[in-house]
Image (cartoon, rainbow, N blue to C red; front, side, top):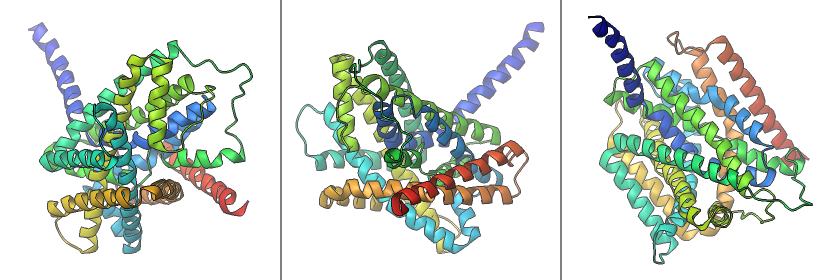
Amino acid sequence: MENTSEEIPAQQSSSSIMQLIRSMGPGIMMAAAAVGGSHLVASTQAGAIYGYQLALLILLVNLFKYPFFRAGIQYTMGTGESLVEGYAKMGKSYLWLFVLLCVFSAIINTAALLLFSASLLGYFIPFELSAITLCCIVLITCLAILFAGHYKALDGLSKAIMAVLTVATVIAVIIAAGKPVQPAADFVSPSPWSLAAIGFIVVTMGWMPAPIEISSLTSMWLKSQRRYQNVTSKSALFDFNVGYIGTALLAVVFLALGALVLHGSGVELSKSGAGFSHQLIGLYATTIGEWSRYLIAVIAFFCIFGSTITVIDGYARVIAESQRLLRQQAELNPKITQNWMIAISALALGIIVFWAGALIPMLDFAMIMAFITTPFFALLNYILVSRTQLPAELALSRSQNWLSISGLIYLFGFLALFVWWKWLM
């Protein structure tokens, strides 16, 4: 009988851990959406240009944004409503501003990620295909997965992508650490703490780990997940923390990749994301060995493909939900969400076909808009969580409240610095 009594707590503990793992979803999907441009491009370029000098800043950005991303979990678990519904309660003007920014961001970000994914897909196809054809292949694959399984398909795919991405990236760092680039004897690492570097730091901060409106996507995914699974506050916060902390650590890992392989190499970095990823893959092949070419290509492709599919799904959900609230409809028709997926995809493809040359300026504008709007979305999320009556385990603690206030000061302070540098200096 003694063995039986000892086994019961162990079984309960094992069952509890397995339930936590099974309930993981929205946090991992947020991580998949976040690790695209901000990690593969911004973090790696930060390491390539400045070595490890920006590592602390990247960790600080993730720390100060944490409470505002967490707000999506707190509000949805505490009220059963999405953040979008919370914005609507604050007033229609807030909701209109939010949806207009989301429509713009959805189209531009999808176009950039789609072109990025297509360029990387070309590495695995033994014959020549045009960029448009490759974009169509990626887009059809994304929509087929989303239409076939919708939330459940995306949930499973996101977990697989993050698992492959994490393992492959760590392996690449270990290999690169054994054979780092040897800088020239007269090489002096540039300082990021100068006015000339503000533009780069702004873009890195705006998309690290992701624009704040991604918190509304996480909120919608969580609301959808609760229809299929029994999600507790503990499991939802665990899922979010694993995804969020994972993205922060991956950002530092990608920075280390750039520092180990590119910093001091004397190679001029490409300004386009797709061009930089191809450059990165080629340099890995020459530095670590030709065999690593496809390992890095797999990391890059899964990184961007994961962002592409989650961005299409997430933005379509929040825009459809905004439309429902603006029309004051009781229920959201799933076909409306699918229609927005098609519309976002078609408009993104249209930009690639007709205005490919304008994509980089539009993406730069989207990054700047993400940085400018970040403090305001952060403030909205803070107001929602601090003024809403939430259960004790979801309410803001004193330390979380101080972190939120510190984060707002940090974000608005950097915004003021950027405005001074960009338009007043």
